[in-house]
Length: 67
Image 1 (cartoon, rainbow, N blue to C red):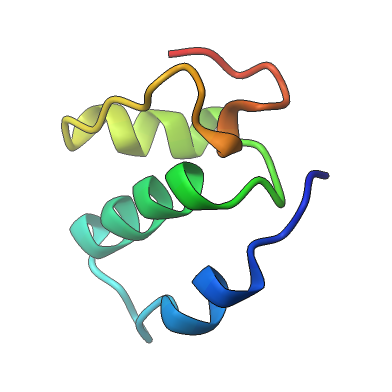
Image 2 (image 1 turned 180 degrees about the vertical axis):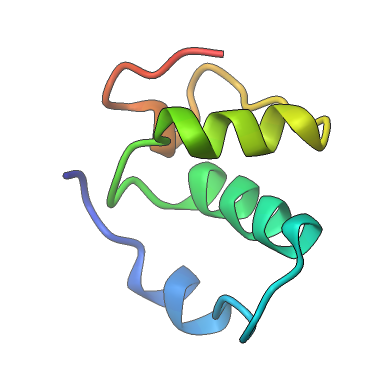
């Protein structure tokens, strides 16, 4: 696990019963702004299916996940 961005987490709560699009948006923002955990293969698949491409230096990719 990496360093958590507490202020980002406080300002960006996952909605209750999120749609798949809301989940993809949240996880994309999370990977860009917080390094508390790496992007898992299932989250990467969700992002891919909604057209999100993470830059190589995204904090959520710090653990070696590449896209």
